[in-house]
Image 1: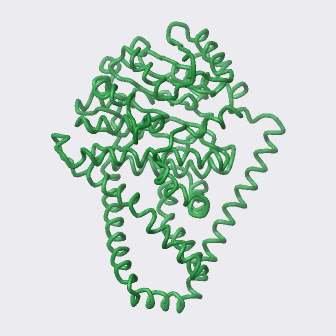
Image 2: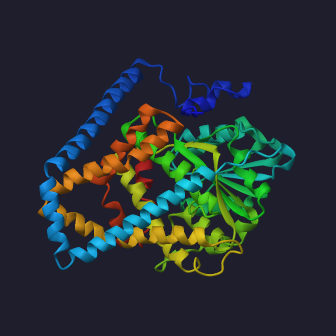
Image 3: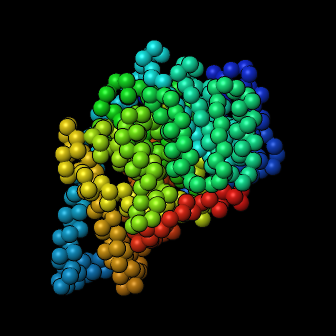
Length: 486
């Protein structure tokens, strides 16, 4: 049965307490589309969306046409490459990689079909939870986040909410105070004397938390009413569970082109990839938007985590990936709950997007190096095959970044039309799976954004991985300055 497409405003249309209706109604929230100017803006976005989608299809079909037209040139190119000194070894390498990646994909597909999220346990079995919300320059978004958490279908007496303002320069602290007035003793707020980064804000929450389970939620995210209980259920069902990743979708996917693309990408990344990783007990990253950790697992690595360094410098990025890695290292399983949905804001402009991806890329390189230190040791009583397979797959992608980048530039300079046409045809073929996946899960019309996103990423963000690799030692959140300009 096809799932209903989730829109951000649906989180505020049912099940809310009457005391929250004024603040959480569509008319007064960030989801207000009633004004004429916003209707005009929405119409403009829709026209632009149609143009982007149509352009994407035109490009891919043009690529397919030229592949057919240049078939003799392709045959000649392959013949020359095979008979060159480097061509035959390169061909063998690419064939081996193709079969490896195909095997991994088919295995993930098998795991995905076996995966099922755990249904929530009853109220009396739910553990006590401390929900930590770090915030920096989020403004009124933190208000929406905190009220959505307070409205969760979770026993109030088992829920502690801590909000920590990490030295914001805007009105974030004001909105935390307003939430405190609204929620009373259900919410405790703190203000860091200066901005020290998200890791230190979370650390303060971990130190102050009293719950058996720590839940971290970004201050630009909205949780569904049943998200918390679904998120913490695996800790009750599986004593080996050390962390759980939530299912992240895009909050602002109706406002701009980039969020529309990213929404399809996020669904693929979480509902397909993390479902497979969860079957292996080795989800590699619990997202900052919504994640849960067993308290004993956190305190088993808290000192190492807060004092983590890379190449002699303190680590101030990738705190979620680092925590996940350290919990896996302790022998715990890290799982994914597809039914623990959270909507989070993503960048709407290119600059914000590439800075976010650079941060993720650098963290990926760092944590892969850390994972190499334990993944082939006896770090877990149960099967270690899954974690090792994921590590190898990720390592290959990192190690082959520059060889394939150089090969790409070689093709561009020597056979530009062959490169362009084959790349566009490749996008049409490879991206069809995300299209089918999203169409089956949510919406056929929105699924076509997978094609646009692949074209966009291939031609404008291809440099992220190599740049992140050579600058992995760089510090900085990168998007802090962007937040200050909002």
